[in-house]
Image (cartoon, rainbow, N blue to C red; front, side, top):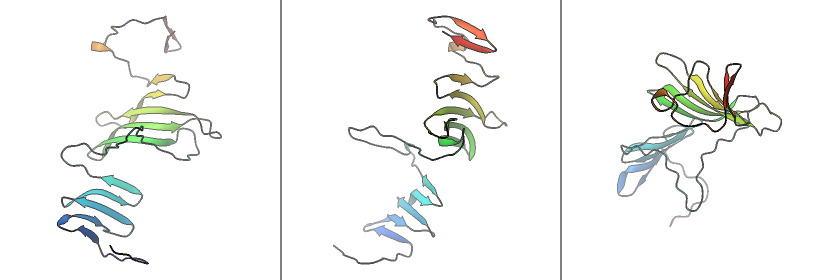
Length: 171
């Protein structure tokens, strides 16, 4: 093996012996890039991490033994409705959908929140469609409707359905 004391300066990349299209690169200041098959697979720089997937489309895979794999967003936001963690879907760099985990109104204890779902209509803006708030209530955006199989309710409701102030309640 090789034992080094101090820094090692590398101009651009570390190449795997016998596999010249696999490398760890340093393409610019404050950037690291991992390549396999001659293509960038993971790029870290400018506060972002970018993963490029191959034709199998599996993307990021988190594997765990006898544990639960988790994606966690942990931020110390200061205001109600600030996004703590989000999942965004883009079509050719245009955001067409989002799931946002947002801070609740208790900005002292920071222990409440909501989940909001957004979509974008053709030619329109990203719009909140549905939310689950901290007490478990579900809100569907104004002007939207809830559709079941073929647009009609086909199941049964245990309890009663009532409408009050433009709100539908199932008790």
